[in-house]
Image 1: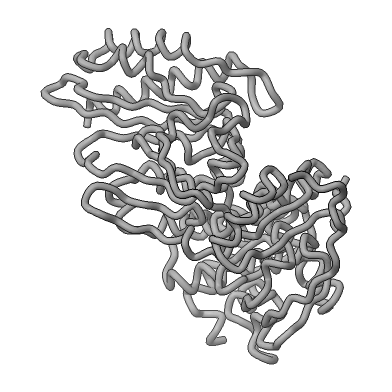
Image 2: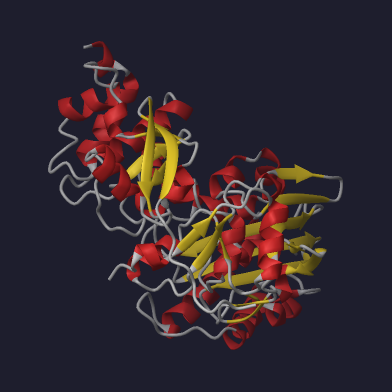
Length: 288
Length: 167
């Protein structure tokens, strides 16, 4: 049943500085509200637990996609549509654009934000596997300044985040220099659009004369948070990309993920599909 | 510092432009734009389907981008240019997508139709000659329980060919 709408507060701060002052003065009292594609669903279901929200949607400092020599900085309020249409991201970070394309439908992509996808902290989120593959960092901002954390260290468990009550996610930083890596993104769900994934995998590897010199593998919907499969990466790094390596990688992946049975899928199905995705990827990387 | 009690928010005035006219909406800040537009401006072409952003029946345009109005709190309409299905035709002259839906049987019960048309109009704005695949992608967030989609895709393809607009 829908929540009682008048009991929720939503306030538009005049500036980012004002927003940061407010959350510093009353820590834990306010939560950020951006495109609403997750929070309004909870409101409708009567499951929106928190009462007071700051409408950050129009804060210009948290928008925009900019580039320097070394990195791309994506504002936390960049929508999936903004990401899909960005020429630099398309060229250098195709997995993030693929994730944006496969999130919801167009209307969701026009409102949903990358920062929101991270802060919602769903283990089934579509863009975090891509962010893990790209070694993304988060720039967190508070009245006291900014700090950077590797995205791989941001989620510490189911819906748990390394984010203080007086901080907002300001920007997502993508280090450049992945040219020539062979990359892969596949989301398995009941349909391409509008479906929450059963399993999602993003990966990239660098192949030099048939040998895997470096590799990243990340998955959604197979653990309490989106994870990097570091043991499987280690099993592949330095190996020749052949059937022996692929078989070993499958075994390793099965042992390091922890999928569950839920309404969308079963643990057994998820484990099998995750291994199949990995094999599909490694075989295609070998052929290409 | 935690407060002893959270004050109950009051209704706010939200100024925006809807289908070419200035409008002032008054409601609690978290009230769904869907409800406010239907009840205060009588724009009942906006339909409620799922109420959770899955079906696209409540689609509207905000600043030129299609969104699900069930997922937009009215406070975020401040200063925004809104277009609903009621603002797609120019006076008595239907949009070519609307003409095509009539000519090719793209509408049955009508609940999904406003959202389908808005999604197709948005596609047309960026892509004058979409393929059937591109049409399917653009309309993937709009669910229809009557037509089986074939007539809808045919309608949109014909609208883009321009034939209906000239007839």
